[in-house]
Length: 145
Figure 1: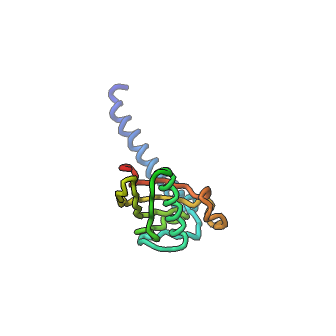
Figure 2 (figure 1 turned 30 degrees about the vertical axis):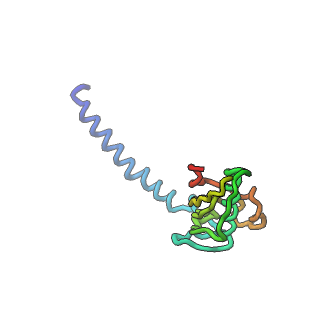
Figure 3 (figure 1 turned 90 degrees about the vertical axis):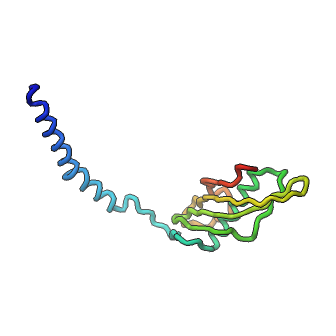
C-alpha cells in the first residue's frame, strides 16, 4: 500500500478536480443565473447622486437620528438639502450631509456625516414618513461630538 500512496493521492486529487468542474460549478452557475437572488423593486439603484422625494425623506430621518444621538442639550441645525444622496436600490439610501452644532459659549462647529438608511416596507409607501418604518444601518461623522 505504501508504494501506491502517491498514485492514490494523485487519482483522488484528479477526481476532486473533475467533480468540481463537472458537478459543482455547473450547479453554482445555475443558481447564480436563477431568480434566487433577484430583488424585484420599483426603487432602482443609481451610481450618481440623485434628489428625489424618497432621498429627501431619508435625509430627514437621518437628521432625526443625529438629533437623537446628540441629545437634547445640543443645538443642532441642518441645511435644507443633503450634500449628496444615492439610491442603492430596494429602498436603501446613502446620504451625505452636514450639520452645525452650537454649544453654551455660542461656538458653532460644522460637521459632515454619512448615513445609510433603509425603508423597511418596500413598495408600500403608505408609512414612509413614520420613522419606525426606517432603519438606520450606519451613521458616521459623530465620533468627535
